[in-house]
Image (cartoon, rainbow, N blue to C red; front, side, top):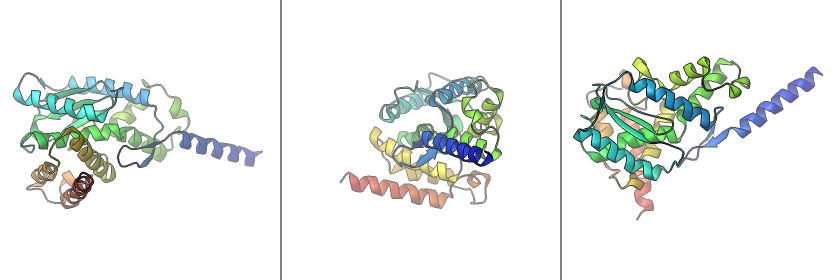
Length: 254
């Protein structure tokens, strides 16, 4: 009987994992996500409101309008009807930006000194939108659930308002005072967001060659041992990988 229970549990987990396997857009990578899209969107909305309540949102300025115009242009090609897109510029000297599920994009004024034109700002926004499209936050939540070994199966049914779920979500996205530069999801997810972002830029009609210039601006004066690169690809590898994607797109469009 115990053996049958083990087989039954293993089969159940296998079925669950199979049912929750997703593919990322453009890169077509298989990923395991144990959070429904509805739960993810609800948590994104809640966290977005909380994060905006803690910062000064800038409206009506040239830069604020640039963020909204560029963001909406990329949102069109992102083609996510379930997303309610919002693009806000906030007053903060950190070189940060993030996009929460549901298309909630926040750009910090500190990053504008590195994004020297609209194409480079499109690099930032496309990169962050790519994180949301690829459901990187939900994937990180799932990884945390598995690593911690806490209620793997039961957690799927936990309501979106459950405190433990909210904590896991916030930790995955790095909200609040712990926001890292460009939301560090890990080197693999960062590289994937770079690649997806280039495709989004291209479809939106922006100059994808400006992407490498932007990341060059970001890395200027920073060593490979700095905190910026602790959870991100090195500057050299990042630019190299982005250039590979650019070359691929250029060859496909000839």
